[in-house]
Amino acid sequence: MPFDAAPTATKIDCLICPIQSCLARRGSSEQAAAFGDMLAPRIALMPGRGALYRGGDRLRSVYSVRGGCIKASTYDSDGNERIRGFYLPGDLIGLDALGDGVCLATAAAVVPSQVCVAPISELRQLMSRSPEVAQRIMEQTSRELALALALSGDYTAEQRLVAFLLQMRDRMESGSVVRLPMAQRDIGSYLRLATETVCRTLKGLERRGWVSLGDRSVRILNEVKLRQIAEPVGLLHAQEPVPHAA
Amino acid sequence: MPFDAAPTATKIDCLICPIQSCLARRGSSEQAAAFGDMLAPRIALMPGRGALYRGGDRLRSVYSVRGGCIKASTYDSDGNERIRGFYLPGDLIGLDALGDGVCLATAAAVVPSQVCVAPISELRQLMSRSPEVAQRIMEQTSRELALALALSGDYTAEQRLVAFLLQMRDRMESGSVVRLPMAQRDIGSYLRLATETVCRTLKGLERRGWVSLGDRSVRILNEVKLRQIAEPVGLLHAQEPVPHAA
DNA sequence: CGTCACTTTGAGGCTAGTCAACGGCGGTGG
DNA sequence: CCACCGCCGTTGACTAGCCTCAAAGTGACG
Image 1 (cartoon, protein in one colour):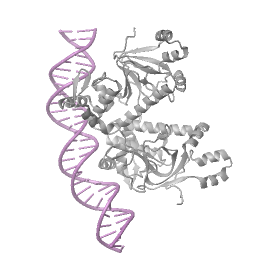
Image 2 (cartoon, chains in turn red, green, orange, brown):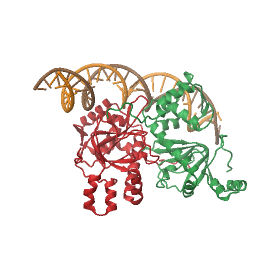
Image 3 (cartoon, chains in turn brown, orange, blue, red):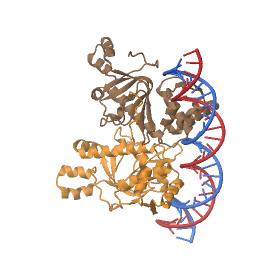
Image 4 (cartoon, chains in turn red, cyan, purple, blue):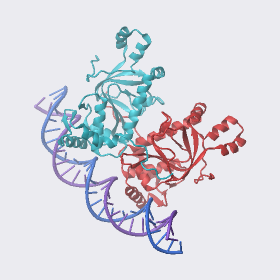
C-alpha cells in the first residue's frame, strides 16, 4: 500500500521519526532524506480494523502520528469504551509505556491514518542526545497531564465542550474552522457526555451565534465569548487567595 | 514546641527521612538515632495556620508526613478550593516538584500534623543509591496517578465515596474502623460532591446497614457489598473486549 | 455562655442521562 | 440500478442524580 501525503495538508515536523535520527547520524541531508523515506517503517491504520496496540501490551516502540487521528481508549468492566485522548499529526503515542514498557490504553484509528515507528531504545538515545526531542516529549507529557487534570474537574457540558474545541483549534493551527475528525460519540466518550448532549450543546452554541456547524467541522465566530466560557477549565490557580493567618 | 508522638499510634517507617540517610552514612545506629532525632528538621503544622508551601512555589525539599493529615489543593479563578489529594503518615508530599522544582498545589494541614523535611538534592542521591527508596517513590507517584484517573470517571456519589472509604482503609492499616480526619466538606471537595451529598450518602450507607458512623470515623460492616459498589471505580480494563476485525 | 465550624435534614430546581423515534448518508448486495 | 442496512446526527419527552438554598442541631473552644 502506498503512503500518500497525509490527508491534512499541514506540514508535519516529525522530530521523533527514526528517519530523522538516521539523518542526524548520516549527515548528508538530501541523500539521506530519500533513503530514509524508503526505509521509514510507517504503518497505515484504518478505523474499525483493529488497534495499533492494546492496553497491557509491552511496547518496544512508540509511534508518531503522520496523518489522520488516533484515539487512546480504556474499557470498563462492562466493555464500554472510555476515550482517554486524541492524537493528531505530530503527536506521539505510546509514551505511557516509557516507564515500565507496558502501555495503559488501546490505540486505534479514528479516520484513515498513518503513523511512524520509533523504537523506544532509539528514542531514549535520541532524547539524551537531543534536548529538542526531550523537550518535545516533556511538553506533550505535561500537556496530557494538564488535560487529564482539567477533565477531572466538575465543569458543565458547555464548558468542557468549548474547552475541547479551543484546544483542538490550537493543536491544529487551522484558522477559525476546526475540523473534528471523530464522531460526536467519541467526543462524548472523551468528555464524559452522552452523544445527545454533545449534539444539543453544539446546537446551543450555534443558536446563540458563537459558532457555525458544518460537516464534522466547527467555525468559531465569537472566540472572545468562547474563551470566556472555557476560562475556568483551562487554568489552575494553585495559590490560596487569602491566607488564613500567619 | 515539642514533637509528641503522632496522634495515630501506627508505626511510621520513614524511609525518606534525612535522619535515615544520616544513619545510613554514619553507620552507628543507636547513637545516630539519638543524634538524628535531635537534628531532625521536623515541622509542626496546624490547620488554618497557613500552608506548608503554596502552588507555584519553587521547592528545595519534599516532605514526609510523620503524623496527622495533609491536604494538597488548587484553587479556581473564584478562589474555590479543590482538594487534589490527602496525605497520611508515611506519604511524601511535594513530589510534583521533582520535575522542574515548581510544585502545582498548595499543601496545608487538615489536623495538627508533623512533617519531616527531605531536601530534593539529598533525595535524588538517595534514590540513585537505594532502589528501595526509588521504588517507594515510584509507587506513590503511580498510586496518585491511578487515583486521579479513577476520580476522572463519571461515577455516582455512592461509588466515589465508597471507593474513597475503602482506599483510606487500605492506606491506614486500621481494621474495620476508618478514621477520616478531614471534614466532610474536604471529602466533598476531593470527590467533587457537595457536603450535603457526602452526608446523605454516608447516612444512606448506614441506613442500609453497610457501615456505622461515628465521630469522624466509619465502621465497615459489610465489606463485600462495599467492594461490589466500588468495583467499577478501581480497575481499568484497557483491553478492547471484542476486536472488530483483523 | 456565646460563637463558630461542622453536620444533618428538608424542599426545590437544574443539568445531563436515558429512551425513543426519525432523517440522511454510505456501503453492500441482489 | 435500487433496496436494504447500519451508523451517525438530530430532536423530543421524561427521569434521576446531585446541587442549591435554607434552617436547625451538635460539639469544641474561648
